Image 1 (tube, helix red, strand yellow):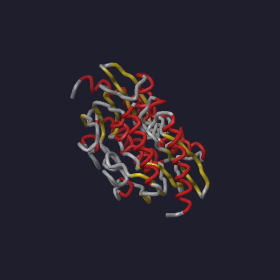
Image 2 (cartoon, chains in turn blue, cyan):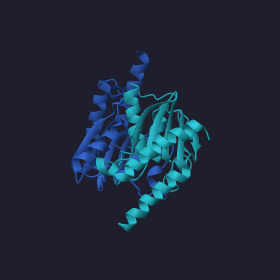
Image 3 (tube, one colour):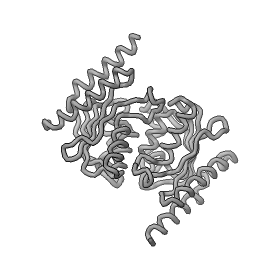
Image 4 (cartoon, helix red, strand yellow):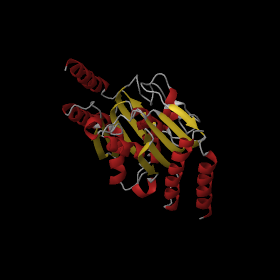
Length: 152
Length: 152
């Protein structure tokens, strides 16, 4: 694991914790270009009444605005949970260079668990994938959230 | 083909033509609930500097705001081109009941061409799919757009 990967994943985890405090599924995302944070977001599906408001989608949108370009060439996306089909599709469309995620999502993950969309040679872009960075912390955060939800 | 399917696809095609006039890839989408149009959008990736701004994503977001609910239960999405991975993921997450599309997208379609994501039994939602409604018109619009683009 790169030290920088751990550093940026910690930022994403901080975002995920923010989501949890607000009753949202705790997922956070950070986009980095040349070692500099371009955007950071957390899941806000409930607050925004929109299932599109995954942390990755918001981080990609903000990075595109920040860089004034829909092509996020050279950007790395850090996210605390393996991205779903929608988010993997968005990652591909925005030409992100590399994805680093923490916990796997066996029920919906489209980077490795259910699909390997980011390495599909039929599509016009491929993304380098690193998984398991700070996996324990991210998985515990999610497990705690769903446990508390069941108890309430 | 249902007469109503043709009617709503004509609306989506009108949106696609609007996109073309503005130099955007001509794709239009309409969301209908109980026979009533809830939202209508066109692709605006270039204008909005965001690869997320596909017609389907915008239509889903607007329908969620209009219905004040992220669950688009009972809704039908009409779109002039087979949705990509991102848009199929968004369709699944928003619990749309049925997708009707016009032209197939052999290079990126995730409803039938490259993937059949909307009927994946491992995911927590399935979507009824109808294809080929006003296919000729939608495909011609796209072909004209790319032909003109190559000439310019």
